[in-house]
Length: 271
Image (cartoon, rainbow, N blue to C red; front, side, top):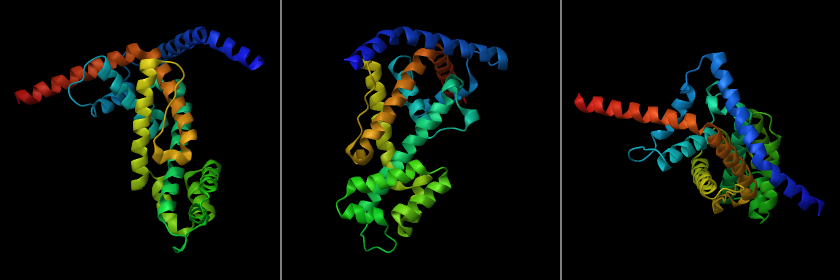
């Protein structure tokens, strides 16, 4: 009963809290204008959106297509995070959160990829580790827990490779582990595209229906599905609030990007 009361109270104050957060984030951005003498259309943010716009199909206009560009930009930010100094100005306050969520998605993708590879290998293969043995013995959950434990424990990229090779996957999968960590493995790339599709669907649903973010993940990610769904839900929540706060700047930046693109096309046609 106390839990229900607490949840009801939290739901009651959330709208007012959101207004305060929006005002504070806008104030912070404007204060950075003064400190860094950044122009009204932020250069890194504009470049970030322009890169996302290049993947848009057909002419870009305001409204739904602008939203598609923003969603694409946010997805790429999570799946391929920039260096800290290249984070868009509008995400300056969320830089640490972007890094955390991106790393979490990467490690869950890594675990799902290794599980997929383990299912395709034989326990008799040279260098097969305990992961392959567990999978073929029918202990899929134990195998997943083994990989996730190593993924969570790792302190760095090199440490992650060492842990997985020596304690989970065995020497026979060392090259696969290294490729997965660098996001170069073909299976990893396929699963990353599935995550991209799931995240895009979650962003669109949150925009259309509102409410608590709920992201469903594809069957290929079943072994880490619950964890991945929670992380992607946090990405959706962050993106939704960020878009509300900085909608004016995003629209202005995209207007300039579209105008510059049309000018370039016209110049090329005349030449």
